[in-house]
Length: 72
Ligand SMILES: [Zn+2]
Image 1 (tube, rainbow, N blue to C red):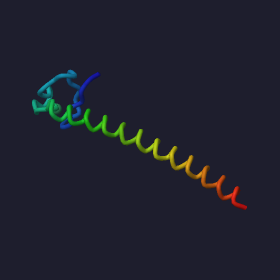
Image 2 (spheres, rainbow, N blue to C red; image 1 turned 180 degrees about the horizontal axis):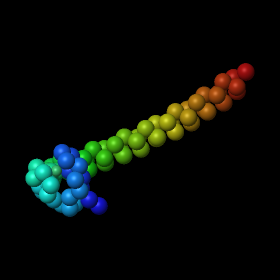
Image 3 (cartoon, helix red, strand yellow; image 1 turned 90 degrees about the vertical axis):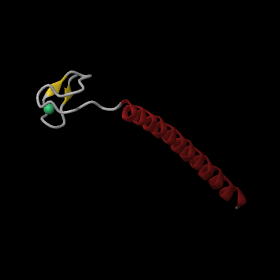
Image 4 (cartoon, protein in one colour; image 1 turned 120 degrees about the vertical axis):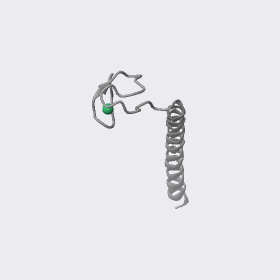
């Protein structure tokens, strides 16, 4: 996959540090890549937590509904 230069939109080698067309610095710092990976992991964890909370809420609604009809 070619890395497109954000300045001149020319394709470069995937691990190019400098654009071969406009000679600008196009390398992505490893720290940014690590930060992105960390954010992706956190996003997945939050999504799992959200789906667990939704399931819990659904089961609560069902239980509450049963109790309400049993009272009558
Ligand atoms: Zn360029």
